[in-house]
Length: 602
Image (cartoon, rainbow, N blue to C red):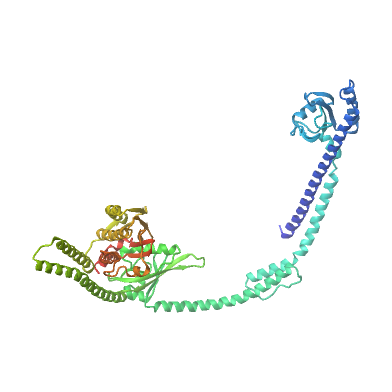
């Protein structure tokens, strides 16, 4: 069906709907008016009936019958008139169809209102519809006049004949369809030219414009389509130039990739290599033919899982920073690299591959090793100076007491206890110094951090109780197994918990929270102690710097070394009179046990 027919039928249908709706409202309004007219007439008849007859007279029933006949002659739809005693509820007098009245009275929705003298309502029984009126002369009157009317007869007498209306309606709709079709045909005539132009544009022909003959919406549409056609012609020329430019850019990018000093290779979503540059071939020793189509050609077997996790992270839309890891050459040599993975997306923003950039980190690691050695020499110098200073003071005390005893030729037990205390202090300093200075060969094994913390917490509970401190634990339910040397970690957690307990001279709470992150386990210990200012916080970890009376300042330094050997991170934050938080991050990768063991020997 064409658009002309659709619009013509739609216009005629809307007109028909409006007329029918108007007719319905008009009929409903007429019914309401006729019902109101009967309402007023019934009230007038009830008043006349009370004025013209005496209810208690012997001839009252005959008089009521005569009046009913008189009323019915004027109003043939009247069925019954009755007088009811309000006090007894009995029907005293009636004229007409008494059974219909009794049936109608039982179906009344609204009962007589004691505050009103007159009521009028429509009543529906099982087989007929009625109008019923209820009148009394005044409020509290004993007698009520009930009048019953046939609704069907009344409505038929006062309803209008709609046949002429419907006949006129049919002719009007027919005439409207003809006029609408002619009008729509004339109105849509410019649409043919527009359709012709659309076909021309779809065939990539932009030369001939649409002739504009009107100034209405179709004329404006034709003008816009002419402008669109002209713009498309311009854009097509631009696209041709852009295509040539993209081809030149692709050649430039290929030249850039192939001449880059970093190894660059492209993988599909399944992990198969589909392209590699010359630096990749030089770094790993594989030719492009040996590499393309293979998965994880240069990834060591124990790092495949790490590679898959990185690809999943990129597929989720997350941006990852360069990751330092290991890759394997064709000869089997494992070399440290920094790898960056970026997603490659199509026009629908769907990931179709991954671009990998590998940078050889061997030279950088050598430079970092030289810097670490230089830092170690500097640290050793600081430690040596600190140890010499710290040991010299107790040695001076020992020398003085020994000279005193030699001079007095007597053994003083108080002096002996002081000398033993100073010797214990020397032993403590030397022991912690050995931990820092001596490389330790440790064996890493998989342990759950929660178990290690629980053991330390139970061990420190007695000391916490003596200091009026309560340890509160909040552990995740996720698995927190990491490769570690549990005795060394216990030493770290004992140092941290001991510092937290001693930082609260008046007691308080120590909060221990363990969470599993994406690649790490987070252990956070927070106290409610005296805290530290920013300057003190910056010096924590320096050799022999301490805020405690009997401390050596080496505990935090030992802890940092242990966490560093586990390739973790230890962070401290504090606020005066609020408390201190120590956060320790330990890596989760199970396949890096060997690397951790090597790092612990550095």
